[in-house]
Length: 211
Image 1 (cartoon, rainbow, N blue to C red):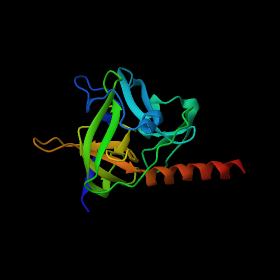
Image 2: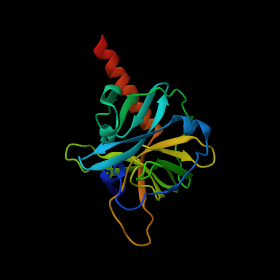
Image 3: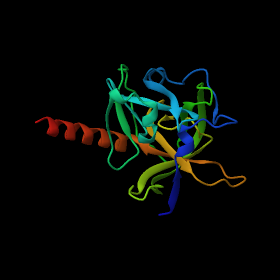
Image 4: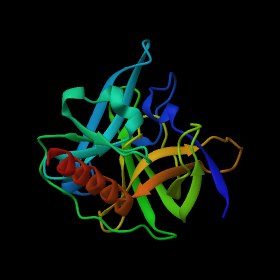
């Protein structure tokens, strides 16, 4: 299995020039729209950060842990010990149907532009369950599905949606730290099974701590 290197910093920060993806004035699925949460805030003192989150249970949303500066600290429920996932309270209650990704699946990823506007990137799933080496000496190797698509800054924590069915298949967390002419950008995402396993682990730990 090929190992990929991870770059997550630029996904949550506004680029100084162009936004990733294409402008979007609507979502293809109304449930995705009602579950989507744009994130913004200060990042690294001088930069404005943008990212996204998704409702995965009534009043519970997920984003990337590296987006914690974009989330109200009072609303944070917990974060995964091993994956770049953070869970927080929200007033949103609509939860989109989910499905596992599959190779050659056409997908849409949603995120925020440098001005905070909605962006969309079309892509195709290339590989499943790939090892992504995190740029953190204490972080475990991440397992991701990989899709081609012009996502990037502002898509951090945003949804990956099946283009035909509208079902939620994953949460973006990074991209390949490589830029070769003629090669489509590779985006990394956690499938929804991983997202829900980590959420259930946090719930179980919270329940045990409360006893």
